[in-house]
Image (cartoon, rainbow, N blue to C red; front, side, top):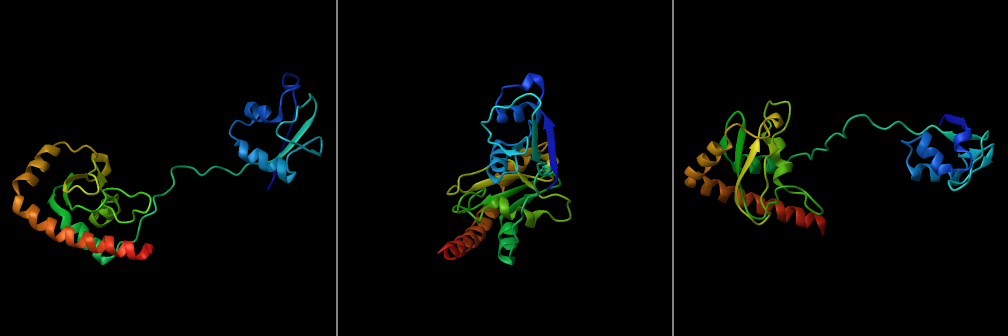
Amino acid sequence: MSGDSAIVAEEDDGIRLDRWFKRHRPGTPHALIARWARSGELTIDGRKADVSDRIEAGQTIAMPVPPAAPSGPRPRKEKALSPADIALAEAMVIHRDKSALVLDKPPGLATQGGTKTDSHVDGLLGALQGDAAVRPKLVHRLDKDTSGALLVARPPTCRSPSNPDRAVRRCTSTKKACRRNRAIASSNARATVRRGSNCSR
């Protein structure tokens, strides 16, 4: 790792070393500074320094150059979908148009992931991406044990579809399709949840 150094200015005379970093290296995390101090990589006039040391004008502070922060958001880690996952996602679709999907979420399947929750609707949306450059996005959520219609925007730039009520009304008017798809999706969801439970044992 390459090094960096600076000479303490008159206006910094007498302040703590960690205070100097806040003034002159504001992007450096305190935990990183403390690690440099413990390892001896942070020095004052060639001597090992501590973050609580008082510094004097004219002294030389030497330190490593902090690693560059990654640019942009961290890429989303997508779960590889099995044929059963894809079939479950398709079975839940009860309405599809160019701006939105309506899914009939069965009880027992979470809307989004969380601690010890590997199977969820959000994780299945990649199966409904088709030829689009980006995956669909949830507009709202339902509790895990609640069944009902979930509105999904496609693509994400249409997070709030121009006419979501029309899609919801379409779902309401197709009760037979809703019940049929719910039975299929519920059966697949139970199998998926049981498979996840067996894996966690």
